Length: 186
Image 1: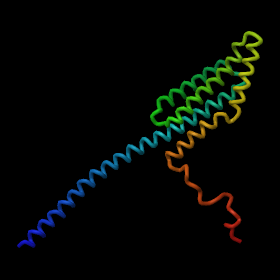
Image 2: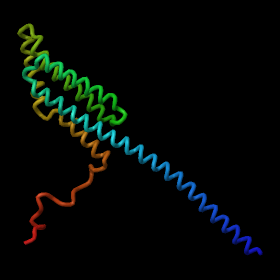
Image 3: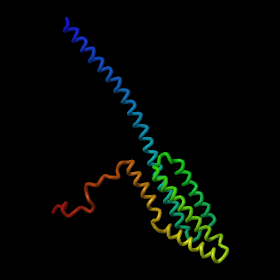
Image 4: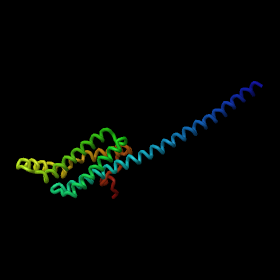
């Protein structure tokens, strides 16, 4: 009789543990699934933000380099609009960007604006000979910044942050290109 009590209590404990395990496992599975869905959406959003930032930076740089010698009023309006869109976009998306990247984007914004203003103001608001010379020098400095890889650092930082988020930054390729002579079959 005592053996039956022990076996019965053991079976009740096992059945209770199995039911408890199923309940806990289903709750954990549901929360993991919710987390996966939320994380996937945020991850996708971050990648889209990075891509748009890169596109905006390249677009601004391209437009500025096209107009660096002679900015018309239409170009001025177009570039100003692109600046405002760029600034609004990265300020709105601050929560998705690292502090380091935000600092880099602020510097980039200031440099773009300075180059833009130097180029445009250098052409339009020169009055005295000193002002003309100073404006022309500033215009050449800005032109040289725009025509070199001065802004490449911010662009590379965005790409590095994207790669880190996608966890592809530290992986090395297994094969080398072009293939080594050791790999060739003769």
